[in-house]
Image (cartoon, rainbow, N blue to C red; front, side, top):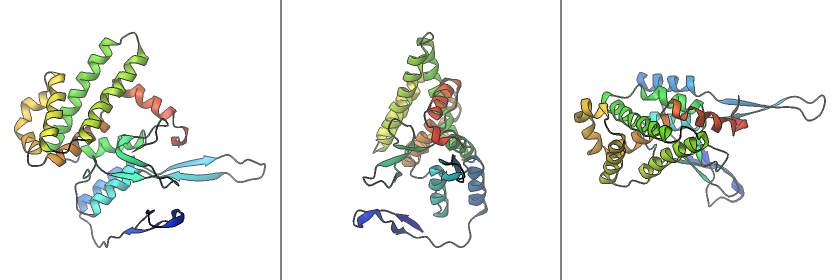
Length: 253
């Protein structure tokens, strides 16, 4: 059962907006969710007592990624289904929507992915994809690594500029892919990214496997490409992820 606020109910009261009757799940779905849960635990935040004698308080931050994957698995969808379009409301008096494919930062708080656990969970989940899906993600990772390497060379003496350009590079591709509405747009965006990277070995060895994703299954391709952007790991973005975590003290366990 899913509870949420709706526009036609006053006072911000949560009501039932969705139900799902369940009996048994396939073993592979249970194994996938167990793998994700091991990387995305619910974070516990402990508060210090304000007065002497008061007990220490505690509140939790659940993983939005874990909820997103669970919704897909119980409905029989691939775990990444809707990664490019799914959004959640933060249930404030004036609700703002947070995108699942975007990182959560103190600058805007519009992202659902909370570093570093969700990134670890995404990386773990990419390992259970089929060969063509993994090749697509690896090709995006290779292209990003080439782009970040070029940015690093151009900003060797300026760490601030390098980190800023790296964040802008990732956000540029993320926004383009999230806004793509047709197969032609998705293909054009990925072709542009691959061409800027130069040689992408995954395309040379597995091009025939990736073609169906670019044509008949372009929605799946769009979701996987955004998963690739969010799951990329490399030394060019390690400082960026650390800075983001430091900007969010509430995310510390």
